[in-house]
Image (cartoon, rainbow, N blue to C red; front, top):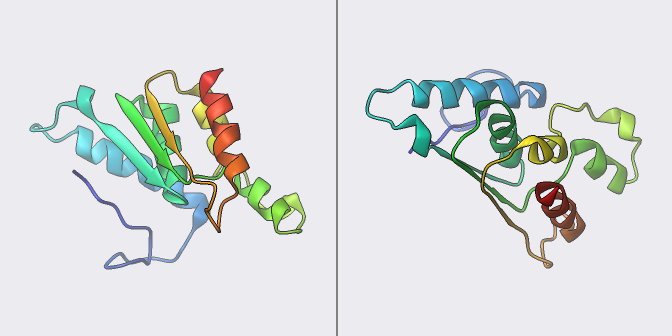
Length: 132
């Protein structure tokens, strides 16, 4: 198991950078996959909420054996728009919807109707994208 921290979180150094999340996720995955004791064909990526961006990015480009997304939003632009702000304030680096559509392996999506942060409709749209 590899547990990664975002830049500037926990014991990590650096400055917070949402645009860097996908690249960092790839670096962590590649490091794990390169370890001789790790069976690359059995790696599962898991992301919850914002961490779903990292998991979806890895799923899109590295083809893990499975993906688990919990309480994850579709795109940052969707979340910004739901807050009443212009979609243009958000970049597209955290686009989980496209990544889920492109992933062809097993995926488990979990989202509750009582989530006070991420609307349930995001989970529904991700589920529809995974079914395509």
